[in-house]
Amino acid sequence: MANFKRGKFLERIIEGIFKNAGFYTEVNTRKWGFETDVFEKKEGYNVIVQCKQHDKAYLNIKEKLFEWMGKGIYAKVDKVVLVVSGREIREDEYAKARELGVGLWSEDLVQQLLKLDKGDLKEKINRLIGFKEEEYQKKKEEEKEREIEEIRKEIFDRRKAEARVRKEKREKSILMRVWKFVKWVVKLVWD
Image: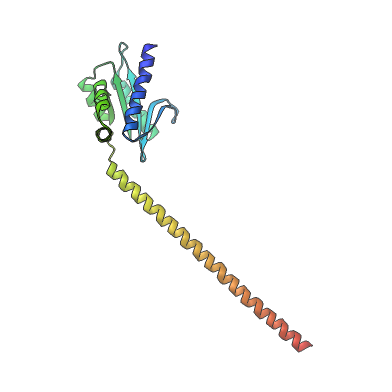
């Protein structure tokens, strides 16, 4: 039971780190049919984190790296991070993580992150997970421009339709007046 509590505590620590770095977070989510300890999202950039607290139990990190790489591909997230606490991470495990594109964080790294102020934390987290804020700001601005252009087109199309309706009403009005005039003339002639 103690490991379970410490594992949940680690999840909350990771959630807090990402929140302080400006991410939206969810803990123990089942968005993709499997449980993710922590899900983070920032400006369309999605990260899933799996926390492993193992003081005494055996943990095959390479196996977990493959497992979570696959889950990340399935979930179509931008980054997967495996946080390991209570056990040293070997260099070959770090190498495998780099090869697979999975972030592998040690307890020491988490402790370092906890000591950073918000600005430095944001910068460090962005670097660790490969989040390039400038690219996403540019992407966001481009999306905003596309939305504005769509709104402009919609307004233009609506005005064009309204102008067509007004023209049809005018033409109908003119035809009605002509028809009334014709009826009046016919009435004059017949009377």
